[in-house]
Image (cartoon, rainbow, N blue to C red):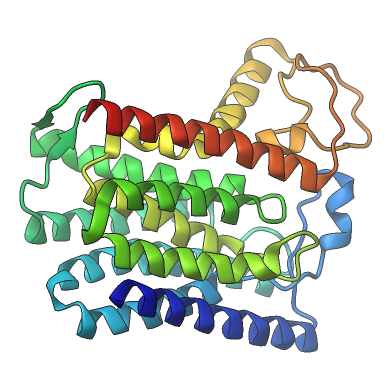
Length: 332
């Protein structure tokens, strides 16, 4: 019953908050600025209401307040998941606000984002050591055992996990429904691993994400912005840590890894050869029609519609995450 109530609260608040946010931003003429290096097919999205992550956080926050009083045995987890989602979401919110104020698609500097993200990560891990028994325990894949690592290694590992996950989700946020759908799959996977102890929190964020996707499905009425991408990335990273399944994150967050790798490969290959692997990166843009491409790239030319790209990438993500889950339950 607790799980159902938390999910219902989260979904209801998110749906209402998102609708109010859309109406408010449309009435004020406030919307997303589209980066000029992206595919031209996205130019019509300029002006679409953004910062939909605020609705996600309002829904999640309402459910966490309920869980604080209705699930007292999980108060430590309430605080830890709140730090993961709201701590990083606040950074994204500041980035979105600066972008809107400046009238262009740049907010915080890259260095400023990283410093702030590392700060939130350090706060999170400090609380993990305060509240969690055996905080350095890692479940080992392809075995029936776990291992603990030295805190000297565990601290930088968790910082890397949180910062990289937050930015990976942000990179994936380029097509309607893609980042939200992929986040929902990853969150559900960690819910299966965490079991009943994490289920109320997984239900809360899943319901909030569903409420957002209602408005973010193609053609989107609302974008999540960095507010939402950072919040979802922070929650997913926190879930990996709190379920001792950090090693499984590359599979359970498979699409996010592929998106990051596409950028790293593109930049590295271009710097070393002057050519490109992808038509344009991150990965999802390679599959879209891109005008004015007068350079060679290694992968075959593909021109799919936005919904087709999103659905097919989500299928790939689901298969990779399912492989990770199969490995976890078979070998644990």
